[in-house]
Image (cartoon, rainbow, N blue to C red; front, top):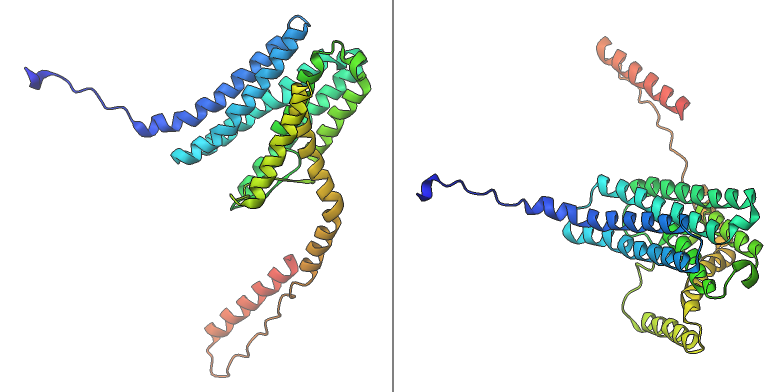
Length: 300
C-alpha cells in the first residue's frame, strides 16, 4: 500500500528564501500605490495624513529588504532592479503627488512642474546609485547625494506636522513649501556626501550621540508638538551633509586633485636591441611587438 503512494516534493527552501526579501520590496510598492490612491482621492486632511503614513510604512519595508537579502544570502540583480522601481513609486511619485494635492496645486502649472522635477530627480538619483553600486565595492561610508527615502521622509513628515494646522498656505505659505521641494530635488542629484553611519560602532561616542538625539525628540514631544520630532530629525540629517560639504568639501577635492597629479608618469619602456645572431622570424616578431606598443601609446 505504502509503495503505491507518491511522495510529495519537498519545498525548495532556497526559492522561498529568495522570495522573502522581495516580499518586503513588493510591500513597499503597495504602500506607495496606496498613498497615491489616497492623495488622488478627496482632498481631506485625513486622506493626506494617511497617505503620508503609507509612505513611512514604505520606508520601513525598504529599510529591511536589503538587510533580509544579505541575512539570507539571496542578493541578486533582480532584487536590486525591483528595489529601484519600488523606490521610484513609493519615494518619488507618491510624495510628488501628495505634496501637489496637499499644497502645490495652489501654484497652478508651476506646482505641477515642481512636483515633476522632484519625481524626475528621484529617478535620476536612483539610476546613479545603481551605476555606482556596480562600480564600487566594500562598505560605503557616504551616499553621493541625498537618498530618495530620506527626501521623501522629509516631505511626508512636513505634511504630518502641518496637516493639523489646516491649510498649508495659511500655516507656512505655498512658496516656502515649493522651495523646500526644489531644494530636496537638487540635493538628490547633487554630489554632496551624506553619511551612511555604517562605520559607526557601539562605543561611548556613538552612545552619547544616540542619547542626545533621543533627548531632543523627547523635549520636542513634551512641549506638545510630537509631530515635529521627525521634521527636526530629517532637517538635522539634511543640514549635516550641507554643513560637512561647506567645511570639508573644498579641502577634500583639493586633496583628490593633488593625489591625482602626484601619480607617477607611465615609464617609457626601451626596446631591447636584438642580438645579431637572431634569426629573421624572431626579428619580425620583435618589430610587430614594437609597432603594437607604439599604437597603444597613441590611443592613450
